Image (cartoon, rainbow, N blue to C red; front, side, top):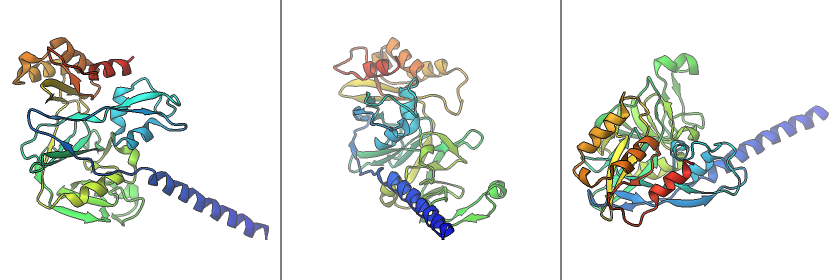
Length: 315
């Protein structure tokens, strides 16, 4: 009888653990957010958002709650403990972005910033979501492609190099499937999909595919038709404009493509059509910080506190 009660308790504890996990996932929801843009005059979208750190909340929780990848908060708060941030502290979330260069204004993935953008050119709006990308040695491929296949509840056909590790040639849909609930392929072996490991968003984690938070792929998947152009680019430095001001957004060279980043930055500036309007000191400060935050680098800056925000968070 005692053994029977013990088994019941163990089973009940298991159900409670599963339920707690489900509730934890349910707290992360998202809605469609469309930002107006006009290239090139208005190419900075969104705005900073202030928030207060809640009890027992990690920086990973906060990033996901505000639609950011872990890299975006880690770059802005490099000295803050990601697992035990100061309870009650008021911090700013970098929920604004310089739009990446685009030829087609459809889907654009900028690997350097670990973000995907979905442009709707006719409406003049853009949506953006954080992503996880290929790890070193498994870099996500650059180029211009099209969405060639879409599948809900996809089966994962395990690459031969990984079959011994997983003990199978294919994995059925389910909570362990790394493709998550939806996949949109742009090459036979590469696609944009959900994930069974949300904390990999904002990191170099995959074997080349693009991972989205579950709540974001649910939004993106139904909006993207087959045949949509997808540009995969690598732009750690982006220039943009807003309200007559010039902004730069600088990210680390995550794939180590530029041996001399300062030289790359100088060449990038020299090729920018409005380079004469850029304050060199502000620009180089942004290049050295590599905070991933749009920073006003205009010679004559308007009322803007973005640069001050970056300086404050790096203290």
